[in-house]
Image 1 (tube, rainbow, N blue to C red):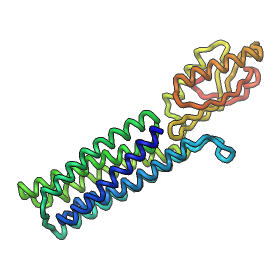
Image 2 (spheres, rainbow, N blue to C red):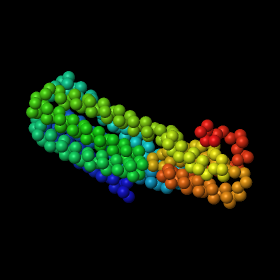
Image 3 (tube, rainbow, N blue to C red):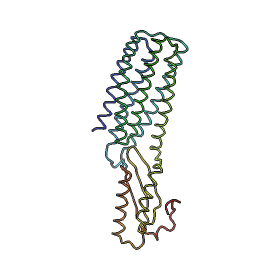
Image 4 (cartoon, one colour):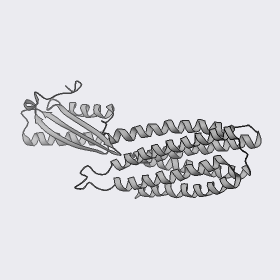
Length: 296
């Protein structure tokens, strides 16, 4: 419920800002404000995708999706990253166009007022999305946080540019600052897109998680001899871990089962939101198994 409420707030506020920015942009003939209005509309669209992804990812596993629906969040993160880069590229185009053609503003004070309000709202939304991304380990919310963080810089840049041109008559301050901010946004969006693609391609967990798995197993020597066929992946807030656990030959079936459950519990405690599938093998059955060089 909290995830859905957070996603809904990220739709309503940008929609309000887009409408107000658009009206003031046309009234003041400020291209930067109109570009910011378009950026807010992109926020509405991308936040709608996030809300859909959050709703889909919370659905339990079913017959057609035995591993759940968590990849919906990664898809949303990738789509948002693309939208952010498109939006930033549009801002670069608008900035270059202003430099080439020149322009004059009217009622800069009104434009400054709405941009200041936009910064305040963007700070609130960015903090909310970051918190949600941290709590739920969600790529979609992290992408939204980046989106609203970029809005803070974009809106602040517009404020600085409007102020420079209004009070200090600095020519082309607005487009130059817009270009610098847009380049920052494009680079940051590319990082989010890379993270989303890694999840969609079932990239393995980071090295620190793999080390935790090995350390946990080695802590139970000599009964636990090692492991092989380790496979891991991460999607949204969930981490999937599979491996064959090598156990001492003399252990009874009950002892092997209990030790396996203990190791699974310890790994889950060290790696939150993890799903484990472990197959226990007697050591004598694993002589030809391929071991990672750092296990035994």
